[in-house]
Length: 562
Ligand code: NA7
Image (cartoon, rainbow, N blue to C red; front, side, top):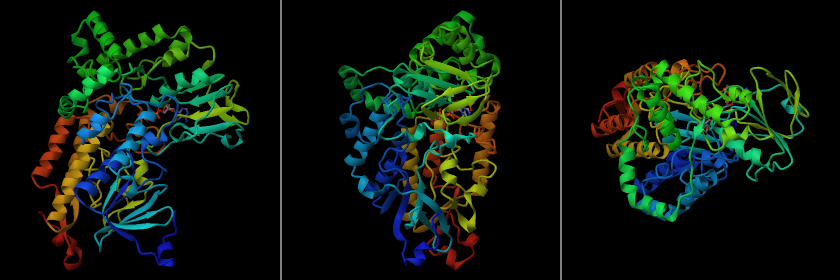
């Protein structure tokens, strides 16, 4: 934490801006563009990395790739941008997406208002001034009317504390903090902990260059093929000609992207019909098997088990050693699709290679890391390099790290002590003029992020126009509305199998984290209609504080509806 007396000591006056945006990924870049270029506000974006990109800056691990096709996973706000950018593959890889975001930052001249290498350490709402005071790790301070953390849901790494790590003489890294210069695995014995969405992408690629790859698996996943392909010139042309249609369809869809149509119930089909249907969805790839095979898979255990068994049969087909295949099959009791669905390219075939070993941590748990590698209960696995693909403190971690304090000294960590609470994943009661983007209790990870981000940012910009236009100093959502929204999100989740599974969706991967389902599981189109109605009705769920309101009367009497 920076020394809070620093600015007083050096007599530094906080730099006054209209808005501080935190982060320069998809969300931060678009928010900066809107607030600065459309609303003509004075904005600074603070970014911990030395470049733009957000998760696509950090996740440079081999094989990192988007599971949503570029036709959907891209900005829609600029027709020119759509037409000039060429996506070389259907599902773009990390270097391509990073280049795209760098291009966006250049094209819209955003970089000049981004402070890189700048991590926010404290953000406090000043009740008297009705402004946010944002302090960075370096000790710089900004006084802003609006505070917009655009930090995403997966940017706080979770590296397990394993005994002896400090004694390891090889190299190691976290998948989402991959060295910029890359890692040369030629001739090396490499170990990887984790078999989630990240590891599933990295394992087949690393296996191609490493002398040996040892995979430490705690839980097998129902990974399904991505079905990536190179885009031909003709396909690129067709995509560019169809953007208007694609975007319209995305906006009217449940998840903000175009997938196949689901049938209502797996149990209503015969086993033969089901198999043929699953085969089709498996062939289509990406999230089709998960969300576009049967509507009841996430509600009904019996239906879910039919999809689970189908994926197991595919694993058994693809992995030549039956014992290894069994270890890679999630056992009965683990439901399909209730953890993050990994999409893969050659993942299961990697285990057919002589240079890949699968270690089942349930049979032989990790005991400690030793100088020469990883010691499990039965042996020492010699390693030159160890990768932690162990996930994130999702949804809340990156917000809580910023030590955010709202009205009357309310700490966000206390407000969220029983799990995150928000209204629409946009506002948090008691944190006036703070807007979050695709935050907890929004459709979040169950909606195409770039589109969800654009729709959230558009909403935030409109709300700021409304607030400023009426001469108000601050806007804060009513507590009752937040309570109702959290209850609604929880009730929708409770009807599904998600809360019964162990996953980062529920906070289960972080010891001591309260269990709460942080995603609105309802129809995305309905969600966006709701937030658009809130705006059209002039924000009935919000209270506004007039300029000077806090000085002239009690807080309650100063709060008004506009
Ligand atoms: P995930 O999905 O959280 O996966 C983390 C993996 O690491 C998972 O297999 C975990 O096993 C495993 N893990 C975590 N801690 C340990 C310890 N202590 N010992 C052994 N294994 C462990 O993270 P990803 O990065 O793969 O994916 C997250 C998102 O980022 C994803 O949506 C992508 O879009 C990008 P577990 O299942 O908990 O038993």
